[in-house]
Image (tube, rainbow, N blue to C red; front, side):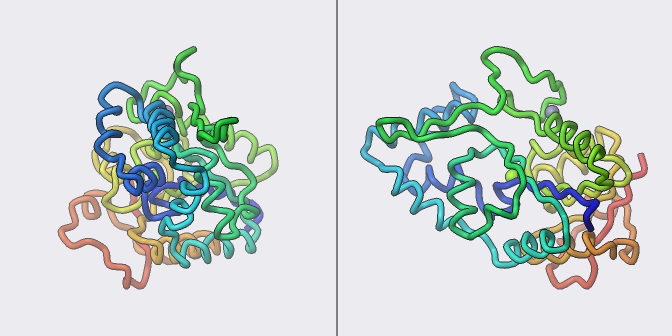
Length: 273
Ligand SMILES: [Mg+2]
Ligand SMILES: [Zn+2]
């Protein structure tokens, strides 16, 4: 599967929580963070609350200890390792930050499986405070995406456009994208008929897909949990997608019974608008 590029979102896709909320909640900063969000964009609020935690004496080591406890399923780890060993190139596009992501990936021995991590820069300053800055500096200019579902500091669609250009140059034909959030909707719109999207069922990206406001070209395969992620991803990587049942978004988006993890086959959404 050397012609395949796999791009993962991080929060609620690779790990089964939001890394920002995970750290904030463990330090008891949930209410304070909600307050900051009334005034600041998420990315700026994260930098500010990390500053407040530092003033309260919380150390980088304590932050790391919390991060390595973030839930990461053995199924996800196995999916990443299998896809890599089958020759796929793996990348991450995330609105978390590089310190959080690297700390978690290193802890699980997963750093070397990814050729590129696109996320918000972060570093520990001289005083031992974690600084987090925006991937795109929106104080200077807008990233220019007007879709409305991308935060000011990051348009994942623009990153996917760049990745697609470079992969075609290398002869890669197919991109598989996995994500759950609102920010994962813009990249979906950049995918072609040859590409495959794995939206997490009943998460914000799923709701946006079901709202059918934009034409979608990619084939879509939903997943609900890490076990489903592993099963669906490895079938797609191995080219077994032709054997799966085709269903409409109407049937899927309005299904009364959630898809269970025991289903024999992943489902394909056939978007026909
Ligand atoms: Mg996410
Ligand atoms: Zn965008």
